Amino acid sequence: MLRTERLKLILKEINLYNKVLSAELSEKLSVSEDTIRRDLHELAKDGVIVKVHGGAMSKTFHYPFGSQDKVYALAAKQHIASKAIGLIKKGSSVLIEGGTTMMEIAKQIPPKLHATFYTLSPQMAITLSGHENIEVVTIGGRLLKDANLHTGASVINELAGIHVDLCLIGANGLSIEHGLTDSDREVTQVIKAMIRSSDKLAVAMISEKLNTVKKMKICDFASIDYLVTELKPGSPTLSEWRSKRLSRL
Image (cartoon, rainbow, N blue to C red):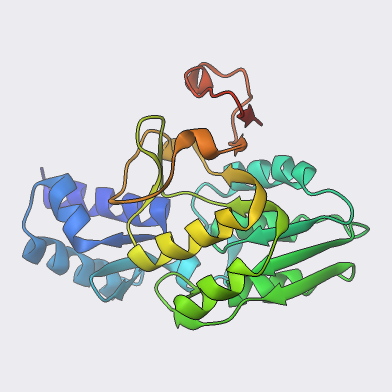
């Protein structure tokens, strides 16, 4: 593979998943981690990504209040958001994480909707606070800067004392066989705690991430109540995505 080709693939992976690890890229592209580190250094020097410990982040994830035109698959994420909003009922309580798709959901909340949102993301809390009728409760802990989320034992303990109607999350990996997965151990632990504190689980993600598997398991596919993508529910791509409890939106 030519180096220019590899750089394009690396940039796409970073924009698709918001954050990637050098080890994952090395395995996927069959090159050494030293090679990946050099590639990431060049992309960071060009100003198209942000280098972090062990890997890299997309600029839109690292700077969530920046220009929207740089968000990967923005139109698809906005369409997903418009469908996910329908799951949030008047007077309901919602646990929501961060991420670019979740931010689009927060932006599209109708002005007249009254609901309570709990979030682990400082950026999400700021965005939600712009809605007059939304009560925002932040769950604090150690800020994991690479994920824009509060993590750790204090967050998990606080989540154990909360019970909400809906847990609304994005996904970095989802397959029928392996379920919902992620690359980050700390993120995996707090997402598990969010799910335990919720009656229903909705996963909102672009279809490009379907049938991908990351290292850390969050939950089985059968545990998901709603799968929200930019595709129509009857799309051939979604034909295999069935379970007894799943609704496809």
